Length: 362
Ligand code: SAH
Ligand code: SF4
Image 1 (spheres, rainbow, N blue to C red):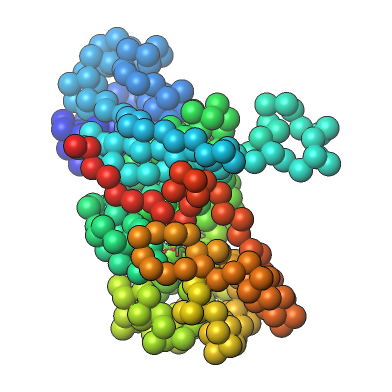
Image 2: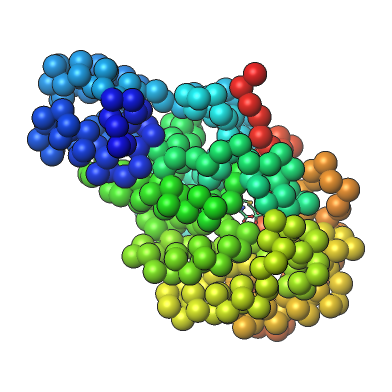
């Protein structure tokens, strides 16, 4: 917040913004941590609730940094427990976020307190819309509206976790948008999530935070140098250049060989295996040539492969059959590749991957 006179503390970029704000208001540094805790741990909706801040500071803050939280415009409940949220920010721009609850394995139940027996994964948007225009993805069809701020990424997690009444145990940046086209803000947002609750963050371990990219090489290279152990997923969808160029037109001109090298280097540098997301599209990326190329790409990059049944969008593309999917999984496993078939959730409320669309407050 370069100019605290006009900024909403929920638009914060890093925790040091709170320090600057407090300094500007003549306050000691510990007030910054108190403010962060009120915002992200205690979820205050106005300054009056911040009872350990002096009354005159609260009055100053109302003027200097008016607090405007994101609002929930719509919640949809899937029969499988998934919930999809339409969240709107102060400027009227809205994004979707998804909450995916799961029970911990029954063998572990006795060791765990009742309130911790459910896990919650939150699927978060990194941009409103997306400029990359992948043909199979609903988000890509609407274009980019704007980048999200770090605090807007944190707001999505806060609202979803509060609605479920449990803390978020893992985060996937797989909602709307391409995170590496908004790199700095996304990393800053993830740091708010990763910071301990004692310091005013969400306390979510970096290994439980996954960033999914369409494969922007600069972002992959930079992520490898970050101190946190965030998990990387790359949406590959085809290891054949001509096919990838067709279905992911926004990345045309970026060679798959360079992507392969970036992933090899990423593994060398971090020791962490990336995963490759592969939506199975009938008559597009499931023939012998495509699967052979996928096998080779996964072997050389040491990546885990996540096979995803294609979700329906307005495109004419169709998912490969279940039989085909299990055959491909077996073929990859036989080649020594670690494979999972993603179970899609929330498809009845269009909350599955690639079904999130852009809606504006009307
Ligand atoms: N832009 C990033 C993150 C958001 S998309 C990326 O592309 O990785 C989240 C995931 O959903 C990606 O793996 C994306 O490729 C996948 N996806 C998009 N449309 C899909 C669809 N119709 N069916 C299944 N998965 C889809
Ligand atoms: Fe954007 Fe990812 Fe959708 Fe492609 S798949 S349009 S990169 S959100």
